[in-house]
Image (cartoon, rainbow, N blue to C red; front, side):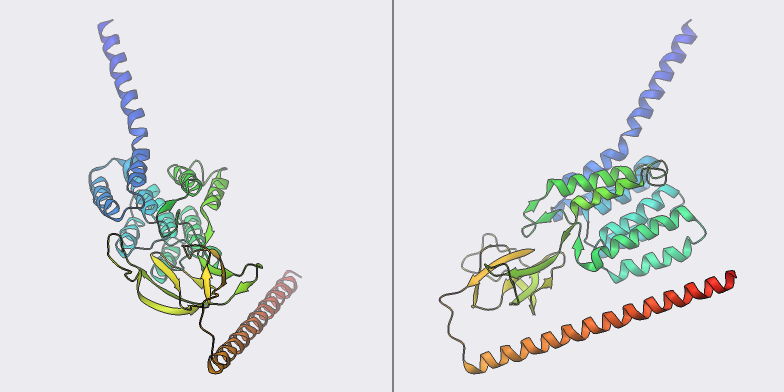
Length: 332
């Protein structure tokens, strides 16, 4: 009876240890959640993840690529890209799958060329393994999310506010990725649709008070931290002047480059309403002429782009019809 009691105690201890290990992967995601949105904390967490990769058990190692992706959603940092690229060839299959999807998540909506070339290389490397190739295709779809017009970044208002709905959607997908074999590769692949709660456009568009689109020149550059500085320091650096609508990347900030309009929002992100500035200086005839010429050139460029897209579409339809006809004739 003593031996039976000892065996029962050992079995209970083993079961408790197994249950405890089952939560370690979720704890790794918890580290990423704590560091989310704060640059210094993200760097410290990255060092912690490197230690976990070296000394952690398989469930912990499986969660590390996902945690790295969670701290850099739609932010293809070079160091993180290289780390995930190395993990995508890991001997542990679930670690490699997590790293592949992590590459797609850090480049989501950015069409980053470095991530894109890495995923193309992985597609040819895993062309004989359907599960791995399926994950590569998902990552490529995330990379080109909305043709580069959509982002998964849960932070907005110059990174000062976090959308809880977006983070909740990301966490649903990340928890599904912790058990790829039984969920995403099984019958629960629809869990990836939870990412839709985090999708939002990364384009800046300006409207007047009547709801009409207004093309206004804006300066887009890297954001500068001006907290605690006296006077009116510049909030962006290395800027370029564009005409709205314009795409904003990670860490970019925009400001109006003209005095003709006043924004009704202090944050120039997404869709912003502007109104005419009553105190704006009157335009000279030369300025009006220049603006008219610029508008005409822009309209002509848009027309040429539309014609080019239509021509390409017709060519694709013709090629598809020719391929279908050739397939039908071959079957006969």
